[in-house]
Image 1 (cartoon, helix red, strand yellow):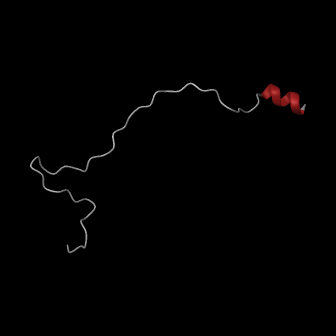
Image 2 (cartoon, helix red, strand yellow):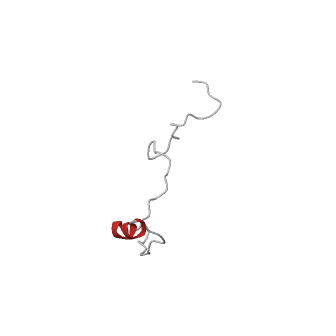
Image 3 (spheres, one colour):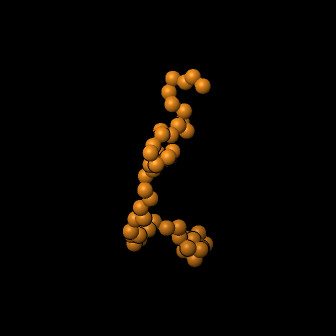
Length: 51
């Protein structure tokens, strides 16, 4: 194939063999406890407002 640029699946020859490009590492974040700024009213609250 005659292309102007490398194929997207191109992997350069390396002494350890053909290796895929490095990817970002997945890092778990610390879970934050936060209170919702707004929530839907409960069924009882809705009934009191509209009933």
